Image (cartoon, rainbow, N blue to C red; front, side, top):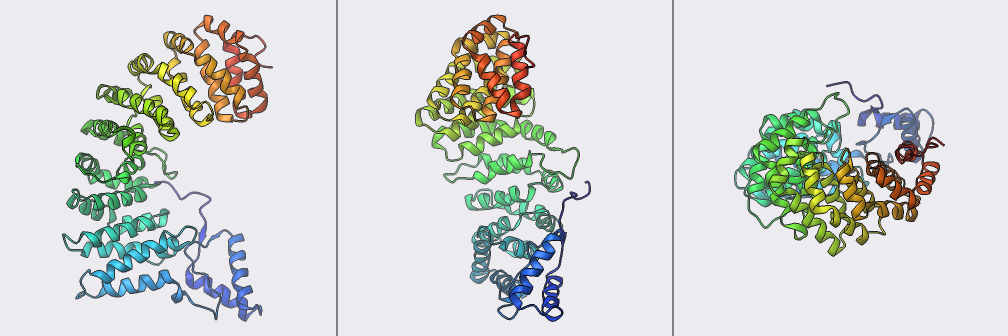
Amino acid sequence: MGPPPKNAGRTISQEAFDEVVKENIDDLGMDPTEALQDAIETLTLQGVDLSGIVTCVPGEGSVKDNPVIQCLDRLNQLNSDPNNQIGDEIVDGLDKLSELCNSEGSGNSAIASRNGAVELICSICSRVPTGCQRALVSALKAMASLLHDLQSREAFRASGGPRLLLGVLTDGVENIDILSSGFAVVAAAATCNEVIKESFMELKIDELILRALSVKSEGIVESLYDSIRVLLTPDDSRVLASQVYGYARKFAKIGIAGALVDSLCAGLSSPTLVSASIALKAVAVNDEICTTISENGGIDAVLQCIDDSSEQGNKTVAKVCCSLLTKLAGSDTNKSIIVQKGMDRLIKLSGRFSDDPSVLQEIMSLISVLSLRSPENAARAIEAGAGELAIQAMQNFPAAQQLQRNSCLMIRNLVVRNPENRTIMLNSGVEKCIRKAKQTHASCKEAATDALRDLGLDDYNL
């Protein structure tokens, strides 16, 4: 682990903050409202992180009047009594805490975690008797709402949260509510925290995930797919080298990639299709895994979803599935399969969503990868209509920077090893489109220059 980020804010205790407000009143003669506002502004300018600090006007309220603090105080009272069983009052308190912390823009989650909520809920979870599923679900939902930053996640880790959570999930793997709320905690805890990812892997969460994926249930466990994505995302800026690549290989080796392919086979009828596709993309980290996914029917399943998204006008599914195919096309074997089975379908998809640059740019990114170092695939793409797609998209959406850049990248791959394609593209007026993109968008300059050069134009640097 490295040092904290340089831009990490300084912190202050609730007591110290209250003292600053009091000094403004006593020493500077400010009225209470002015004293509070001055304290907030001054400390913020000094780079102090005030998240989790209860700010109230002296004389009009106190920290103890804050509903989050009141809720935590009552839960602490109930939990500290060894004779008190985990009953309806604790469950109601946990549900109230979740409601408060999920209030958008309230800052309640920070207040709760700063005042010991994470440690408290870990303690409550450890006391919940086997079979008391309602209490566990309420506690897990509350925990997921609390894990929002490094400090809260570290409190979870220090309290033995990973081991406790894996125990709860293992015992409740047949219960859809336990799975849903529990994996929501996994995703929240592992976000931007390499150490917690490692802790989960040491506890064999991969085996638990595979088991959960195989559970037949009518319920929806979107958080399960979210957990896979988070566990395999190198998002902790404090570490130089993440271990998630190795985790992805472990996931694939035990069969999670195959199980995710099965999840895609339900198609658009599944409300978790998008999450499952994103999770599968996270697992597909090397050529071997991408090939295995194809052998298990993954490419066929994704192409069917693309067809269905075209028919039903589902832009979100279209984008996610094209992005997944782009990842799977990292395998040369898969490239040939996708071109053979899917090139015409991709062009058809572009016609269906010709009014949406976000879909078009994903299609062109995919065709670009398919054509990379493959003259045969580039020829097939031009034959299917990829050249016309690029020109029409660039003409129709001149302000769409990413689309313009993806167009330039695709054009380059279509022509760099195919001299015959250069003539086709130049005769279609592509040079004008590329030069306009180069002049309009700084992000396109390099890609546009490369495209002009590979089109055989001597003045490509102009």
